[in-house]
Amino acid sequence: MDKKKDVDDIEPGPAPSRPVDRFGFIKTEQSNSPEGILKSRPTHERGREERRIRKWRKMIGTGGSDWKHYVRRNPHVVKRRIRKGIPDCLRGLVWQLISGSRDLLLMNPGVYETLVIYETSTSELEIIRDISRTFPSHIFFQQRHGPGQRSLYNVLKAYSVYDRDVGYVQGMGFIAGLLLLYMSEEDAFWLIVALLKGAVHAPMEGLYQAGLPLVQQYLFQFEKLVQEHMPKLGQHFIEEMINPSMYASQWFITVFSYSFPFPMTLRVWDVFLYEGV
Figure 1 (cartoon, one colour):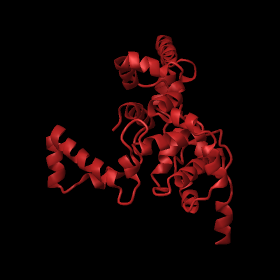
Figure 2 (cartoon, helix red, strand yellow; figure 1 turned 90 degrees about the vertical axis):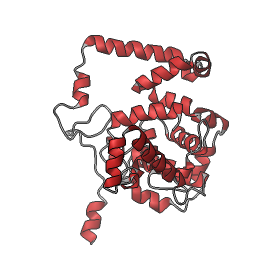
Figure 3 (cartoon, rainbow, N blue to C red; figure 1 turned 45 degrees about the vertical axis):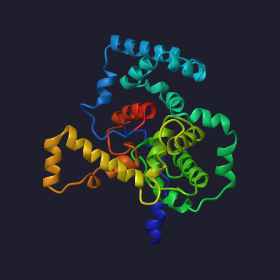
Figure 4 (cartoon, rainbow, N blue to C red; figure 1 turned 60 degrees about the vertical axis):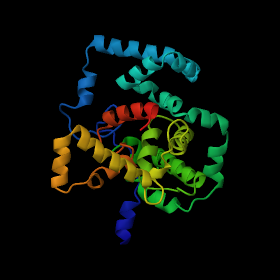
């Protein structure tokens, strides 16, 4: 028992010999990866991407100063560009703007620091237990007690104190982890608040309340949508007695941040944050 504990307590260091993809996940296959294809894009495609970034920067303004004005004047342009995908270098800032979390941050100076430093949570041990299970193949979260895991702990602890009725539920870790790849701790915290409390769209705290009422609602709606848009598949599921709770609960609890290829997750979040569920 003591020997096992000693091995578990060893903090892994960086492993520079293990290649990572452009998002920071350790590669499992070297050939035919989307990242390899992206790196080999011809010059004219890279130029097109640079022009797209310039358009987004002009639309946003310095630090997001022009965003609200542009959205009011050109809502259809904004929707079309978001559906095409937000440039990765601007994704963190745009997510904050379209979710309403930037406004919450500015209206609540010092709140996050107080929650992290001066408050205690009944969920602290549970959060610590789950941290190593959150994006374990990403270099930011791999080091035990490293900066990634500490940031993840701080955000989850802060929210469990901020909303003691909801507290902490395991699926929150993947949402917080996703956000921390694109923004600071405080920014990630306020984006979670914006989502769960409904700063722009309908509140989503029902994903984590007792009985998971919003998860049940989403599963029901999903089943009906499958039957409406894919009737043969829907009928097959009925005949085989397969209901969405058998395979889709995790999709909704983590808001698609865990079960799908990461590039797809990012595109889902681009649209979801702007248009709602």
